[in-house]
Amino acid sequence: MEARNILVKYLIDEYFEGDFRSASDITGCSVQQLTEWADGKVQPQKQTVEYLMHKIFVPEFKVIVEYGEFDSTEEVRYQLRKLFEGYESRMGIYAFYDAFANLIYVGKATNLLDECYSAIRRDVPVRFPAGVKKAPEKRYEVVRYISAYDVGESNWIDYPKHVESLILRISKPRLNKQIGYLEKAFPQLNES
Image (cartoon, rainbow, N blue to C red; front, side, top):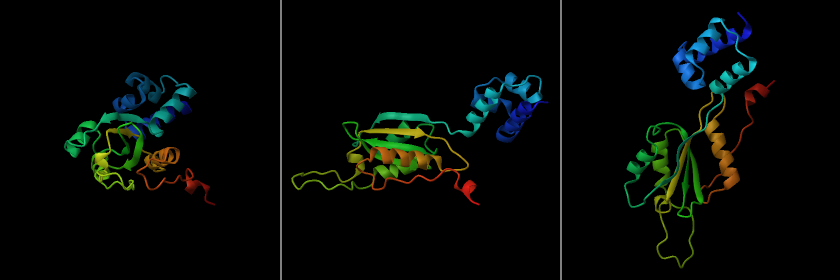
């Protein structure tokens, strides 16, 4: 068996517990192709093996909801549950926008529903001019649109945190107090 065939077999055994159907669902390759490569009947191209590795190791960015409408007069948790349907307990990045669709807050969550709910109910940390009679006190009073993204996971770095930090540094949303930090990739590999 060639090295590429051995590598394909290893990847399927190690990352999909030998389940060719799961490997097919993630990679987009047919079960027959994967089986023939893993059994050594057909040698996969170098680019094919690189593609398989990419699909397995590189976190995939998925849109959960973009600019989902939010009504501050309706029950908050119910609306969030509808917006995040199927992803409520997933980790990801979420964003709040005002009535003009201006980004006003970005957050990272290990549980989208619970952490977004907590964040949207916090106080508005902005001072309003003295002439403003009814300044909003809570974030949900300002938020009109919500976006959420499943940014994937990595065993080596906190990938969602890096995505959040990058967005914060570029956009500097009004309601975020911190702009996050970016770590060097794989700092443990740089140690002597």
